[in-house]
Image (cartoon, rainbow over all chains, first blue to last red; front, side, top):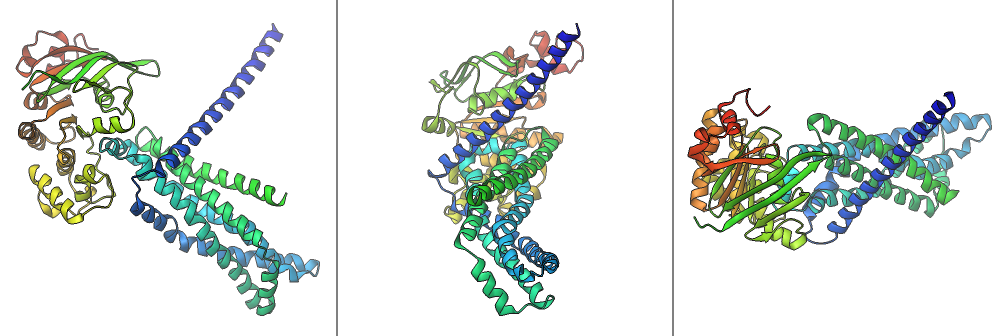
Length: 266
Length: 252
């Protein structure tokens, strides 16, 4: 008797795990299908250059202040930490090198990705989700306009292009933040600091940062658009879509960041 | 009014997750006629419209537009079929990121950049048809009242001069006077433009005013159809209960 109950419990555990795995795979499939359809439609006419530029401004230009602030503070904090830690090993000269590596390879792309995901994935999910529940997406279709071309494509491409540009800016500002603190507070020689930074920086650092940024941009827009597009059930549905979009964009950014780092330097 | 059917539904069925919303709808609408489908909320009225528009694919049955099968159309032929339709959505569904004039002309530009002056002129003409003037051209939808939004949505639906117009609960959310203004507008547009119209509503006053014929949908089937004058003496217990708004009767 007891053994059949245990067997049933084990079975139901496997059923639950199996169902969760199948759900996850189905979801990934649906998202991949959504992305594939968007790209396939967006590369064929009609094109919407106006919409694309509008999104570029939304995603890139208007995110610059917050990204710049994040970068300058992080660069300065990083310099301070490495200086303090380096004192113990009398290795404070590593400050410019570690700031450069930390910012360009990791923190620049990740922080830009997270900040923009917070701003943009949520906004996209909320906007497109509201369009879904107020039938604006159906209206687009009846007015013979393809939502993938008109709404999703411009967002996806704009994000993939905007993020690398923003990471360039954030990396520069992050290094500037570290330099500023090192020179003004820690007594480093400005010229020496910059020379070391230049010596340490390798093309691969920047290339990897840009690839990461492009991938993050893709995930940011994809999560925002997909969850908005599939939102249902009124205001609560849009709220859910927004939350899921931001959380899943965060997770994808952090996970893909690790994978890319591991592939390049592993 | 010719007798050739503009829209012909035969045995259309659609289920969502085991719940049969449409269970064999058969309905024929001649060219130039205005038909209203009445029925309770959730009786499948909206799903019927969305099936005809190709927004939802029915599980079975046939939908013919001008004698051409519409179910399963794709790409260019679906696009060509959709060009025949205009739709007035229940909540107006205006694009709130665009000014009124670009909303009204959206079917013509499909959201692309275009000759602004020409499009504004077209928007102005269509707004005039629904009793609005050029002062609102540059406003956003959220700056207008619900009744005005409905009229703008009407202008947007008629701007490409469709052959068929669908009205989804055109008077819902409007006070009785504004509702009657919309009813009058629909009647005059249908007459002037010579379109075939299909309205779904649970507003009896509206159905009687704008439709030539009325069909009642109950549990996914058409249980009655007849001329609008027969609505109150149909002899059909479902229709009687519905038009009189009684809680007791065959409809539970």
